[in-house]
Image 1 (cartoon, rainbow, N blue to C red):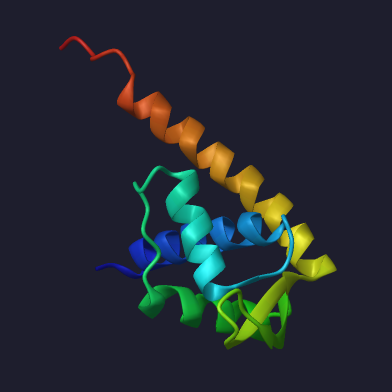
Image 2: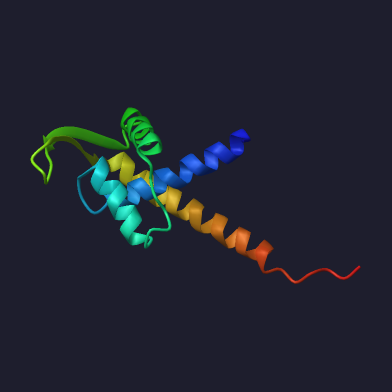
Length: 114
């Protein structure tokens, strides 16, 4: 897979996570569940992708984390957006919308006549 493909996948996952956390603090399980439910199961965020993404975002200070107790009385790390994370969500949402628009133009372009 090309580096640009990896960047696109990570960027997509980042915006999904940031948008999910814009609703309030959640643990990893809650983030994955929200994305799955919001997409009617079309997107499943695997742990192997979710937690590295959360750690990258924590390192970049887009999210902050603290330990708490989950719904089933287990210790869990809860993530919340930082002010920088909110700015990144706005910027990434705008970029995503431009990308979707550009891809749509290609997909629905009239064929050229030779």
